[in-house]
Image (cartoon, rainbow, N blue to C red; front, side):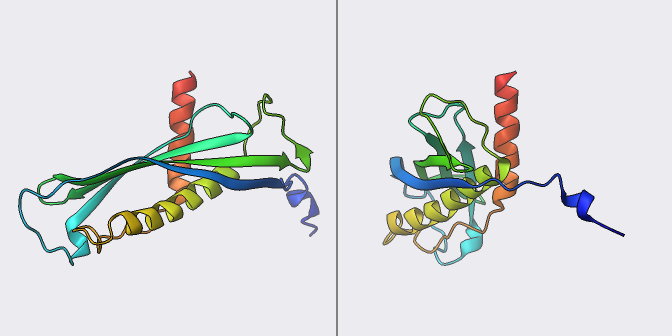
Length: 160
């Protein structure tokens, strides 16, 4: 049995991009009202919010990531950070992108952007929380595919 036809519809898309800017717009840490064991990573929950604006400006796609650190027992917010990540897209399939051009970005590429965002955010949090009560509270491993699906679903609802 020949499987050639089964895969003939699959095409590869080559996108040349780079992480062009990372800007932390907001950082806050609050002392907890009650003391807690700072070395127990299971005491903190993280609320993650991502936004993917519907526009591309100057060949750039932005992902905004906001993370809140909450004490599980009390839901008290003790830390918050908001950072914007700008990815510059140079070309798709070796075709240069013009800044005014509307393009569809494949979901796989958005997932890559989300994955880079999460990893970079984890590093930013390690640095920002160094020497504070959150220094041992690492951001857990997160599935970027689920976040991408939620982002795209939210954007589709917004565009209706």
